[in-house]
Amino acid sequence: MTAGTRVPRRLPKRSLVALGILVAVAIPFLTPSSYIHNVLILTFLLGILGSGWNVMSGFTGYVSLGHSVFIGIGAYTAGILAGQWGVSPFVVAPLGGVAAALLALLLGWATRRTRGVAFVIVSYAMLELLGLIVRNWSSLTGGSQGLLMPLPDWDVRFHNWPFYYALLALLLLSVAMTAAIRRSKLGLGLVAIRDDEDKAAGIGVVTPVYKSLAFMASAVLVGVAGAVYGYYVSFLTVSTMFDIVLSMQVVLAVLLGGRATVWGPVLGAFIVVPLAEVTNTSIGGVDAGAFRLIMFGGLLLLVTLALPRGIIPSVSRLLEQRRRGETSSLTGARLVETTLPVAPVSERVAVGSTEMLRVEDVAVQFGGVKALDGASLVVPAGSITALIGPNGSGKTTLFNVIDGTYSPVRGDVVLAGKSLAKLDRTGRAFAGIGRTYQLPRLFDSLTVLENVAAVNSSFKLRRLVHSAVSGAEAARATELLEFVGLGEYVQAHATDLSYGQRKLVELAQMLMLDPAVILLDEPAAGINPTLLRRLAALIESLNATGRTFVIVEHDMHFVLSLADQATVLAHGKVIASGEPAAVSTDPAVLEAYLGDDFVLEPTTIGTGS
Image (tube, rainbow, N blue to C red; front, side, top):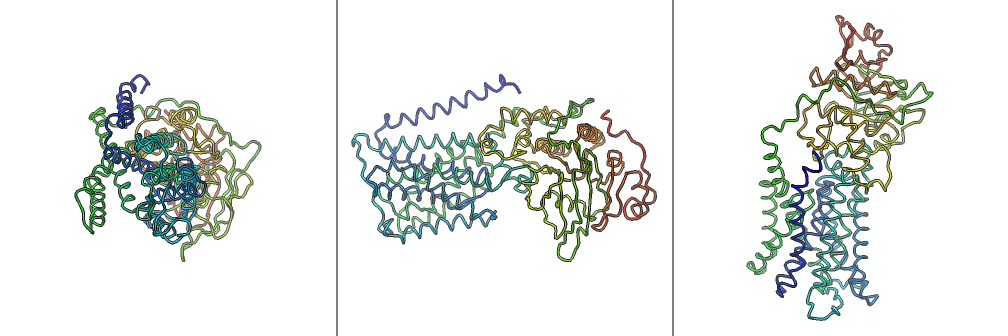
């Protein structure tokens, strides 16, 4: 789609946003109502908190029920420092953000191996723990007696304007930060972690670093907002600053507006806060707090069941479906071309080397089952090696050992003369190991272009802030998608692709990684003959540039017609290795796998015609 066709859709949205900002800026001049100002201040606060929560839980997928802890940390940090230094809390508010970011970094370190429900529990426990610490450290925090903030020193005629505009500015900054993250290499990596963290690690996403940065980004502006909010309420107490109801409200607001969207948390905040104000004024008594907690919990459950995508994604999807109409299929004939573009050249092609990969005496055991029992493999540089054998023979297990998914009980994997034993999955991806899967594992929340642009062939911190959907990263990803025949579908959703197209996108991801060895796990499984010929032509074209392949496949005519050599596994052991013609007639191979009637016939499957 050209830039000219996008303008009519984007201008109204930008105009609407600009109009909303102008109205928000003008409200203090339009009405002197302190009540309206208060509601908007609370709305801005929840929008900031929601934007932060969205980075951690919406983008990264680590759901927190204790995110309001950063409000409390920011408020108490500013209150304590303002009292000790004798300055305005506005001056030290940024330090509240620093304290919140450091706490988030600590949370990321403590939960580096925690996912799912366990992380939810840990985040809630953190909120309760920090509340107990503040309540009991009375010499510093005032404990149960609370902490009095300095009184504002500006003219009373300005009322709460400084708080109002400070939180409005922080809200706009939060939205801008969220938008920048979502478009960046960091943002694509975070969404990849949410969709499939193990796969993300295999395409060069350094998950501990990404998650730590996400947690810190989710907390820093919330901490600053907490400092401003604490100054606004003027008296800090644990029940106000470490409020579980606020944590429930932020989850509700983001889910209602649209998780993992830029404006969803803001929309949700403008719905939830007025609703909360109605309940605050209409529900009283000693059980009012418990009733509101039950009400918001029930509303959260209702939203999750009835509107799982949120308002903005649901409306956007509906409008997109209407634009596309009934002709939205992406499986058209233009996928396959009669000629191939020039294959991309690899920077990792071995020069003057005869051996690219060596697997030495690898053993893997699951309980009493030996999945691999002394398996060895030598892959020459620039070759196509077929790894074949019956189901359960250990082929995929061997791939999992090579890419670092499994750690063998003995043996080693050597790439270009260097042992990979001490490297994890991401380290091996950077070293030059790339792999696809029998069932293609794409990141379904990303577009086709974003799936490829999320890949890192090396780690450089400064690259994470660069846009991955424009510029050099996007251009490289687009070239690779055009090479595999999907140049028309760069903006398509990954979920809209056919099974065969998903395999081609995964191949493009591997080319973006630019590995020294590409491991293909059953690439021909489940695809039609036309696409099979296309895939074979792609492999041959890439191999002609010096790339090295190892292919696990059950379609013997497909893989043996491509391969320079074949290795056969059975019961976790190598029973034969050599040229395909010789291996296909080996009596042990015929008995264990191919059968006596197998005949390797000449084929032109890879001609691309």
